[in-house]
Amino acid sequence: MWPIQRPRLVSPCWKAEPPRKRNDLISPITEGDIFENKFKKLVKQWRAESEHLSSVKDAMTLDSYRQIIRMGEPAIGLILLELKERPHFWFGALREITGEKQIGRDLTFEEAVAAWLKWGHENDYFHEGTP
Image (tube, rainbow, N blue to C red):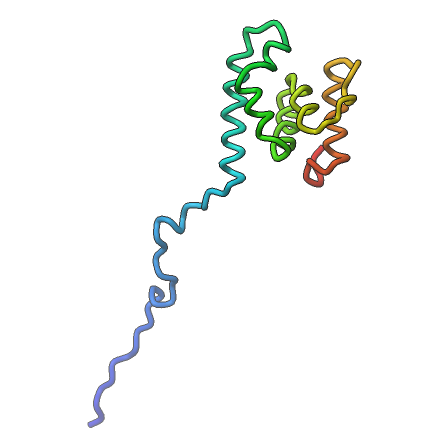
């Protein structure tokens, strides 16, 4: 008699990828993420500190606002996005960082916002398709 041979069982688990480690499931934090988080924290702090101030000049002298300006050119896109989504007096920071002193001068608040957003589009600070 012929020897009985067991059938080979192929389990789907053998074909599956090995289980992932917990660290693989978490997206790595980039320098850009850290920078953006710092910016958002400073914006929140500045808004809280300046909400009771009646003078824009006083609001612009607050340390949180000055720290945003010290973040320099990499903050321009974030400031423009903040200006677009939650308009506020970001004109001083934009002028200091960009050196563009005439944009928004002698305009209403809404016109100044529009002028800076136009400048941002013209200088590629917005991704394609951003209104």
